[in-house]
Amino acid sequence: MFQTNAPFVEPPPRTAPGSRRNDGALRLPAARQLVFPPPGHGFTPTGLNDAGDIIGNLIHPSRFTGASWSASGLFLPPHHLRNQELPTAEMAHPFAALNASGVVVGTRGESAKSLFAWASHRGDFGAEFWPHHLSFAQDVNASGDVVGKMMINADPVLVSRAFLISASGTPRYFDPPEGGLTDAIAINDSGTVLFAVTPLSTRTASQRAWLWHGEEFIPLSLPPRCSSRAIALNEANQVVGFIETEFGLRRPVLWTEGRPLDLNTRESQDFCPTCITDDGIVGGSALDSHARRSACIWTSGKGLQFLEDLQPASKAQPLDTVVAINAGHQILASRHTGHQSVGLLLDPQG
Image (cartoon, rainbow, N blue to C red):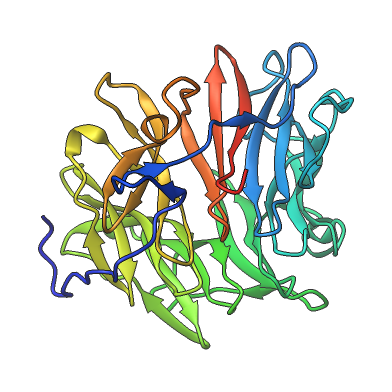
């Protein structure tokens, strides 16, 4: 599909989530709703770790929506009581990510103009290091290293600068060779950081995805005159995201060793990846045969599969997108009903 100087790399065969019937078809259990929010609220799931811990944000649609700054973060350990009494969404405390041991990172603040990066093991470190600027914690690894961005108001624009901060250290900033605005998106347990760079030059104002690995800046390969948007990173340093041409054609891509593989989905499906597992399963959403955005997974062996088709036919629920998949192939998904959202879990182990 794309022409590039870097050859496409075919990933090795992967094992898709769920059990298999005798006919070889995948099978997933029916989705289970995680929490039942108070009246007028919704729940947006944002993270799932290998222990089965789940985080998300309690949202009040009449005041704010989606990933807005105004939300109350919820931590849901495995086997939590679904009928637990939940608080109402009164504070600005959205949860963004968690690690294997349950450390949570996100943002805290009293208004959209006073937001500070926060971590459960570091407290409000954004207010400590950047008291006069916005800051956002976006991911955390098993060592407690946190990545995110701080933003400086240089009227008329906001200047974004990516940071990495260890469990006890001070921020380290990412200044790639070409310069530009930076945004740290993800970090894996090996310490590789995935970040985006937007050039300051108006002549080349297109975003590009980079890795920082072993003290080295590594740009992810692109065809000529294209931009890239990275979404997620796994332990093998594989990255999922998009490549977009100068004419606006956007394709989902898997980078392996920095080289892009077009995921070869139909353009009409508009596949939007959201996550990737260590064994190469990509989760996300795509347009189904009814042109409805629906949760799906992509594997090298089966291509794109919609979760609704993999659940028991009598219990299948429509799901909007996959949020996360863990090592046990539990799948965290979300669904919107009107102005409200709910979180759901599909657990192959029951």
